[in-house]
Length: 367
Ligand SMILES: *Cc1c(COP(=O)(O)O)cnc(C)c1O
Image (cartoon, rainbow, N blue to C red; front, side):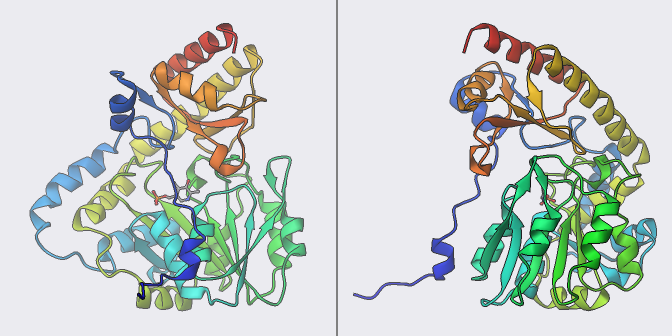
C-alpha cells in the first residue's frame, strides 16, 4: 500500500492555536458576557467609517475585487508618502508574512527568529523547509547583537517583530540604525510593525524612509486589524522595494482582498477621529493598568503596544482559567514558552476595572 506523502516540513509544524473566541468561551464555560482581552482587538469595535464604507460597497460584492486594490493603495501610498509600487495589500498581515516567506525562501536557507515572538514566522519558514536559528531574548527584549552573531552565508531572512508580540518591547531607532548597517545586503530584514500605531513615534525607527531612499533589504508589514478594529475583515499590507513587491505579485493569491475589505480600508484610513480615540484610550488605560497592577504587587513588562504581558511569577495556567470563569478572557503564554505569564489586551476602563477586580479576587482566594 502506498500512501500520500506530505511536504515533510509540514509534519514538523505545530498548528497555531489562537486565543479562545467569545462564542467558544460562552459555550465551554457557560457564562454570559465575557470580556475578550486576549487577541489585541480594538475595544471600541470597528471604525465607524469602515462600517459605513462596507455597507456602501456591499452591492459590488458579486464582482471579483481588483487584485491591486487601486483606490486603497493610492490613499495608503499618499498617507505614507511613498510610491504605490512600494506597496502590496493582502488578506491581513499574516498573509503578507506568508507571501514574503514564499517569495524569498529556498530550502537551503536559514532564517533568524527571536526565541520569543509571533509564531507565524516560524510556521512559514518551516513550511519552506528552512533551517530556523533562534536568537536569544535578553531581559524580555530582542537582542540585536545576538541576531548579528548568528548570521551565516546561508541566512536569507531576519524576522523582527517591532514592537514585539508578546513582550511589547520596542527596538528604538538608534539601535535599529546600528543593526541595519551591519546586516549584509543579501539578507532581508522583515519588520512586522503591526503594533506601530501604539508605539512611541519619537523612538520608532523610520523604516519607511529607508525603503523610500532605495534600501532593498527591508520589508515592512502593517495591519488594519488592531488600530482600526478590522481583525475580522482581514486586511494588511507590505512595504518594500519595487522589485520585491513585483515578485510577491507572482505568487500572491489573486483575489485575497475582498471588495468589502478594500472598502473597509478606504473608510478606516479616513477615520482619523477613531484612530485618535483608540490611541488615546490605549495610552490612558495602559497607565491605569500599570498603576493598578503595581498596587497589588503584580509584575508586568512595559509595553509599546495595545497589550501587556503580565508576570505571575509562577505557572499562570490556573489563573487564566479562573479569570475565564470570572468572564475575563486573557491569553495564556505557555505556547510562547512563557508559562508564568499571560497577555492582556488593554481595554476600555470598564473592562480593565473588571479584569483588576477579578485578579484581586483570585489573589485573595489564595492561589
Ligand atoms: C495580529 C498580528 C499579526 C496579524 O495581523 P492580521 O493583519 O490580523 O493578519 C501579525 N503580526 C503580529 C505580531 C500580530 O500580533
